[in-house]
Image (tube, rainbow, N blue to C red; front, top):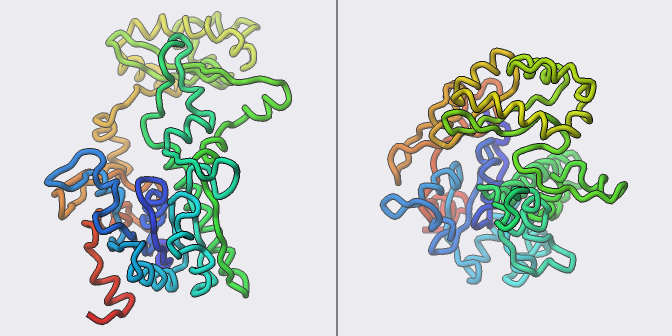
Length: 389
């Protein structure tokens, strides 16, 4: 049995953040009803298509029931209210104030279901001077402090690259999932069983990951600057070019691992240097360490260097692309690459849920792939809500 089986969630989500939140909850067994506009979630038009169907949506909409409603119509609003009246939680990621304007605000939904947990995800949050500004994930990276750090110090005339995935949306979705489950747990432990309104945003979600940067700035006035592939707080940790033109990430962070690394590359005198005895000392001389390691990696293909370092128990990895992930024996042994049958696409690969539960195989968490828009209208409206046909 999946742990969230029986938890009922209505998703008024579009694009990424709210649907990612509910995908996590659905993978864990929650009943998620995704409400889309009559033409479908605009996200269905993103990415590769096969026979007019979104490949990405196969994952994005998995384990959810899909219904289509016009939220601006009286019938659509009536059905949303009816679904929320039977639900534990509702998740939405419209701009602040939108659901109030169409008559589906928290006061309206709580009038029918006082215990409803309402998770609201937006660009900047439900209050503050920026609440009404539009935002997408890139804005979360930019304002949250992440994009400043992705710059390459040697390429100051080039824009700092984005993360490569929708990290702001995914982070906000994960925080929303955690907060939603926490709110439901807290509600169900009180006699009043009163629901709560949760306020998540993209910018704050990224900002929360800035580790020691804020206290460093507050105490010392420091502003952490881009460090490229290195980590400014640990050394040696960087990504090094190998003889075959491929990159190898090496993390020699601890004192013991650092000594093993220097022995492995034939430079034990470096670890014996008193300047390198502590992490602080190594950080101060990181360029010297990187030069020594890079000189060694340039003599070997990436895989050979990786094997040698693994034998010395030094953390390392080649930089994987998705083809490497899809065929790696560890990913396969952990069932992280799942081949599932999608009625709209045929056989397709999905990333498995990243959580492991004893007694539950990963395949049990992926019950079905993303449905066509409105595929579950009949089941939801007539069987769950009991409307006459």
